[in-house]
Image (cartoon, rainbow, N blue to C red; front, side, top):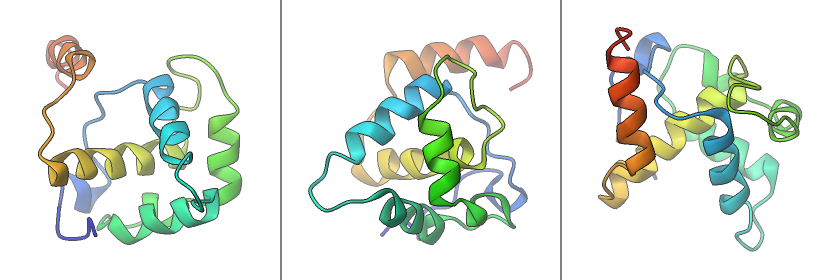
Amino acid sequence: DLSDIILEGEERDAVPVYETCDMIRRKIDQCLKQPGLTQTAFCRDMKAAFHGSTTARRVTQAQLSSFRGKNGYDAGNTSTAFYAAYCYFEKLRIKEGKPKSKDRLKMEELWSREGG
């Protein structure tokens, strides 16, 4: 259960995103390898973990499929599925006590120069 974790900016649908679409697609693909976990169930899990006003609460299996079918670091960056999955995986990382990846730290460094 990730509902007890609230990310900075989550209530306003304004969580800063520090991973590319391709990075999130890899995480989704890895997650969906779990036995019995469907895209629909994953969408339910993302919705249940989210506290924002509207954005991630609207993610559907069709949006997730569309996002997963794209390719490229920014392909799908306006997708509800991308934002919802980013928030979900960030909460999961926090809950599991895992450190930020080297790629994530590099993205934070690059984007901090741009103001986030």
